[in-house]
Structure formats: structure tokens, C-alpha cells
Amino acid sequence: MTRLDDEIPPRKSTRRLFHVAPIVVITNLIAYSQGRISVAVSVIHQDEAPFTTTGLRGDRGRRSNATDLRHDAREQNSTGVHSAPTFMKPSPYLWEYESIVFPHTGHKTVLVTGAAGFIGSHTAFALLERGDEVIVVDEMNDYYDVNVKEGNLQLLRKKANEMASITGGMAEDLLTIYKGDVNNATLMEAIFEKHSLKWICHLAARAGVRPSIQDPLLYIRANVQGTTSILELAKEYNVTNVVIASSSSVYGESESTYFSEAEHTDEPVSPYATTKRAGELLSYTYHRLFNLPITNLRFFTVYGPRGRPDMAPYKFVSRIARGDVIEQYGDGTTSRDYTYIEDIVNGVIRAIDRPYPYQVFNLGKGSGTKLSEFISLVEKYVGKKAIIQVMPAQPGDVPFTNADVSKAMRLLGYSSSVQMEEGIMRTVKWFNETYL
Ligand code: NAD
Image (cartoon, rainbow, N blue to C red; front, side, top):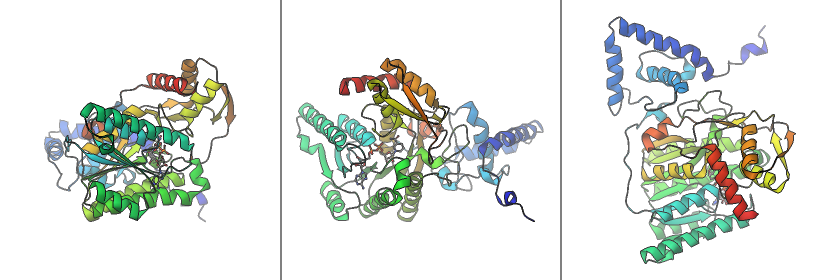
């Protein structure tokens, strides 16, 4: 008789890799010492060529010690020198196109969808600041206070005026704001025609894990249909580059020490995560079918000034500062790779400037912080003790995230520069100046 347990496949855990990887490394060393140097040489040659004989390249560049063994084993797999276990096999497409694309440096007109939101408004601001023209499309939904979004748009108008006065131009030539849905084909086609758009940064989405469990169809429309609408326009207008926001949530409950782009992402644990993974898959399909240059960016928990009011970092700062109770989900040991907004914007703009044929990049800080530690830092900079109500862990929330950012470092020149303590200090300063 078959036990139920027998039918459940073992969990795909990269921790098992730490048992496998040393064997791979040792095998290599033995081969080397026995004079079978040709194996090592052929690996090196394949790495240097733009593509290996199979058309794939291994992961390269700086990375943490903790990920070395994992990556080494994967490289062996991609070069065919050793056969790695099946759970190691990366999706081939993530390994293509590893040649560096140099940045386009000229003036651009960039469509930023979702630019009334948190990451979008910071991205649009930075583009204006460096002299680009920005076209905003945002439907101004009420997922959180619309006044916050209006305030973000106001900041963009102010920045456009400031830039126009420096350059002697007109603010209207630097910033155009459309309030509408990216799924509105008539509106979007008119915008593409009018502004001859070639550079797209698609950040508009319904964000938030827990509400996606309550209303998955809303998330499918905004995120899956919304991304498809943008890809259709990109195809129709033959654009130069499309950058699309994805999320660390695609890694689900990965047990890897560092989440790498090459790992398996087919077990999302919320409808939100599923819509983000679907956006990546659609991106790849459009790239393959229509040769569109598309980059998906997996953001890791972004925080900072003008942060999303529904997210824990903002809630903790605001509630501790006001002496309100904070809800801590779980025992405080869950850990997140919290990434300061300035670092994320830096990565987004680097991706906009580099039209990779198709790529997926993690954008994170590259280290995790425990929830309890996060709360302590907020207490330190707010100067008050938190009143904590411990709540059960929520379905859809993942216990741990930690980005391997070596690929973004190598191909985008990305690195995070704002450490946790500095980021929290700046966020608290912004909150105090804005609300207290
Ligand atoms: P946000 O909610 O502040 O901004 C999203 C904006 O998109 C909002 O202003 C909203 O009105 C707009 N929008 C939503 N649906 C739209 C539609 N159909 N048409 C036009 N506009 C629409 O969220 P954010 O935190 O700035 O996130 C930006 C992107 O980054 C999203 O794609 C999100 O999934 C992704 N992301 C964010 C984080 C994070 O930590 N903030 C982490 C991972 C991924």
C-alpha cells in the first residue's frame, strides 16, 4: 500500500546543495590534480565566449561566500561537465545574453507607469533630475490614501518646474501626467502616438500580498492584464527598452541562503506573487516572439521616505512615533532584505539605460534584517519604545527573503549603498518633518 508520504515529492531545497556542492568542488580538484586540466580549460573558454556551445552562460562575478558553492555547482551543470541533480537545473533563459550591454547615455522620453506611487514617483523624480522627459500614467486607485499619490505628483510638477528654470525650457515639455488605466487601449495608444515612446518603465500594479488573497481578480486585471497591455503596446510601437517591476515574492518560501535569479520560482504563495511571476513569463514570451528587449526587476521589500502606507516599515515608523500599538506578525524572527528606495531607483534607472535582450535581476540590499531588529532600530531613531501586539503569522507572508545581487552588480553595475541603520534614520527624519 502506498503511504501518502510516498506520493509527496521531496521539497526542492537548495540547502541540500551544500551537501552536493562540496562533492562537485572536490571532484574538480581531483581532476585537476590528475592532470585532466583540459576540463578546467574548457570551462574557462566557455565562460569567456559570449555564448557557450549550448548557447548558455554560467553565472559570473562577485558574490558572497555563502553562494559560491551553489553557483559553482550550477556552472558545472550549465557547462555539462558534471550532471547536477534536477532541482539544480536553472531555467536556460536566465543564463542567456550574459554579454554586458553598455548604457545608452543620451536624452530620453520615458513612460513611467504607476508614477504617482512610491517607487514610481521616486523613479520619475530621478529621471527628471538628470534631464529626461517623463510621461506618467497612473490610475490613482484608492489602495491607499489618494492624497499621498496627489502629493507625489505635486513633487514631480515642482521638480519639472525647477528643471525647466535651470534649462530655460518649459515644464510641460519635461513632464506630462495622465490619470488613467494602462489597460485603457485607446488612451494608451494616443499617449504612445503623441510622445513617440521608446523607453518604458512599467511599475503600475496592485501591490500587497494579503489583499490579493481577498480579491485575486483585481490583481489579475491590474498586474497580469496590465503587463500584457504594456507588452502589446511595446510590440506595436517597436520600443527600445521595457523594464517591468517584479518582486522577491516570486521566490515563495525558498530556503536558499541567498535568492538567485537562476533558482526555481514556481511555488508562489500568494495571488500577488503569482501575478508577478506571470508578468515575468509574459515578458519572456513577448521577447521570444517579437524580439522585444525586456528586463524584469525583482524588488526586495522597499522602504524609505514617501513609502507605501500599507507596508510594515512605514506603519512601524508612523505608529511608534505616534505612540500607537504596532502589530507584529509572528515572533519577530522573520527576516527581510529591506532595501532603501534610493538603491532601488538607482537599479531601475540602470536597467532602463541598458536594453538587455531579456533579463531578470534581483534588486535588494543583499542582507536580511530580523523583524525584531528592524523594530529596535525604529525605536532607536524615533526615540520611543514600541507597544507591540504579537499576532499570528499571516497566510501568504514568507518567512525570509535575502537577495543575491551579484548578477545586477555584474550586468547593471548595481550595488546597494544605504545600510539599514542609515535608511531607517533617513525615513524617520522624513516622517518627522512631514507629519509631526
Ligand atoms: P504603489 O502602490 O505605491 O504604486 C503603484 C501605482 O500603480 C499606484 O499609484 C497605482 O495607482 C498605480 N496603478 C495600479 N494599477 C494601475 C493601472 N491598471 N493603471 C495605471 N496605474 C495603476 O506601489 P509601489 O510600492 O511603488 O510598487 C511599484 C511596483 O513595484 C509594483 O509593480 C509592485 O508590485 C512592485 N514591488 C514593490 C515592492 C515594494 O516593496 N514597494 C516590492 C516588490 C515589488
